[in-house]
Amino acid sequence: MAAAIFPAVEPGSALFPQLQQLREQITSDPALSVDGDTALQAELSPRRGRAGDMRVGRFYWSVRRADPALAMGFTARTLYYDGKTGVSRTYDFPDDPLMGWLDQDDGPLRCHGDEAGVQILRYIPLRRVTFRLRDAAGLPARVIAKTKAPRGLLRATRAVVATHRAAVAGAAGAGAGALTVPRPIRLNTRRQLLYFEELPGRPLDEVLPQIGVAEGLGRLGALHRRLQELPVRGLRVRMGAADWLAAASVAAMQVGLLVPSAARQTQALYDELLRAAPGDHGLLFCHGDFVPSQILCHSSGWSVVDLDDAHYADPLAEVAALYATLPHDLGLSGGPAELARQAYLDAYLRQSGQPLDTGRWQWFLAVAELLQLARRTIRGRAVPGEAQAVLDRIGFGIPQFPA
Image (cartoon, rainbow, N blue to C red; front, side):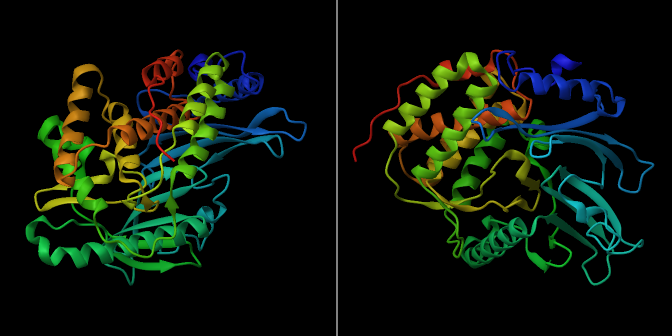
């Protein structure tokens, strides 16, 4: 099992010795083992020490298992290593390394009383919990609730409120084709809870086999552009080329550190991105994590959820991000993956009414591929040889933009 724990990390990595110790802790605890009935989330984040050396800054390995006998329907055990203290410890949900408020008697999971049904929809260790509430006092019969750190919760609230206002304003002229997003219901800052309406439907990635790849991804492309054209006002976050370059710099460092054999080529790619960075113009509203699982499909229409990270950016940045991740998101490869990508992109461009700006597209796609490679590597999803394959695919045909 040890070799399957962050398998892409090479023995030559400065973090490899620490990873080996963490692997031993994982393999010694049966509750942290992974099989066909478990869901895994993991992260290995490097940090620079005071002496300039690189070490593990934060590490977690979290395994979730369904358990209908429990009130919340599952168990989750997380091994967490804090690079600042050098201490590792295991946590059993709702105990969490950083979200200590989850397990409090008056915390978000217990404050609604025993009569309220709580169904966990998503648990991301250290970051957030999303759950469904049934028959909670003072709330509609079924609502979705989310808890996270105060700063992130306030940003999520601003994004949900601003997007819902724009969607409602645009619905009058759209008729049956109106774009639907969740309606915010209440923010409880003391308990770190945001409530919003539950929308009908199932995630697109689940229903795609029934819809068909070409039909489903075509609708997704048109929906994406319509979402970006919403006149959303009041968001504080804007992402320009400098921000994408900063993210690419971190990604290049992470890949190079964990996969030393790819370090030189990764740095060369970043240098090329820096040289060819485009100017900023035409920023539009962007979802922030636009993937098929965030689209709910229903006979009454499709809805877009999980708008926490919404911001303004070049729309092609988000298109490239989805284009790059689609094969992994949908579990596709080869011809089916390319069919899905092309159906999505063609429909997006038709909806926009504009031709593809090839130069900007190549630049943003290269950034998206690099960011995805880094995410897969630090989350333990990349496999040996993946970094080299991705870097070879990106190549160095990135055009130079005029100043």
